[in-house]
Amino acid sequence: MDFPGKPKKPDASQALDGLKKIQQEFNTAAEDNLRKAEAMGQAVKALEDAQKREQAHEDARYRDRIANSAAYIKGLLAHEKKPHEFFVFVDHTGSMTQKPFYAALDGAALLKQAAGAGIALWGSADDVRPVTGDVLDPKVREGFEKKGASSDFKPAVDEMVKTAALNQLDGKPTHFVVIGDGEFADYPKAKAQLEKLLKGRYRATVDFIILGRAGTGMEFLAEQLAKDFPGRVKHHLVNGPAYWQGTEADLSKAVQDTVAKVATARILPAPKPAPAPQPKTQPAAAPRPPKQG
Image (cartoon, rainbow, N blue to C red; front, top):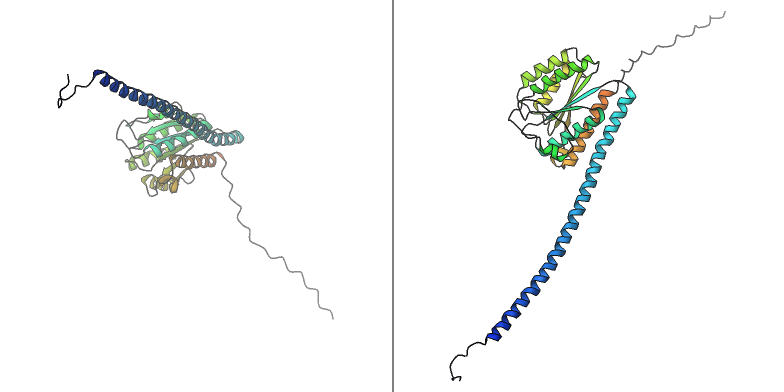
């Protein structure tokens, strides 16, 4: 018996129905969210697959570009029918961050494909470290850890002397290409060792490809050596937009183009100097006929 003014107890069946209704609403929302999550997952996977295809396509184009340049250099070597040895020393000091370092490796890869050039890293450890494997492989590149704070260039020149001596025994000239940002710590020692290399009986040339800016120690070193060894030591600057504002691909292309020009100049015979102009001679005057009368 209910008394007026006394609160009525909730009916258990009503409470159960309410809970079931709420549960159904949650289940409906969960199913809807699950469908949305599945659709979102499919969209993400489709975008990831498209990105992988684009990256694979770009990687193929990237390798093809290097392969095409390498094929040109290889054709020059075959046409000249003269032996040439190339060796690339890549700057791996602390200032060579990913963008310039990877561009330098791309240039080195071009010469490796074209002429079987050896590649070595200097400046990231006390010793010079030869590079093996595919330097275009990201996993190989990630393994090039910096193992010290050395920025001495002389150890690389020591390796140049050894390499040039071995190639001299085989009757081959050696073309050394140094790719870096132009900074190193041991100028006097490196210069003295380079002079030893160039004064020796070795048929060696050295090209410095300097990334980033002019006025570096390496540029000054190249200029000083070029005075005593004209034609055998040169430097080439890769700066401007490709370095400062460009992407890694822009800088890579600029380095590849420079490496190709360097190799072409070293392979092709030096042009013969034009003959000196001969002084023009005036034709002899015809004799005058004798006066009559």
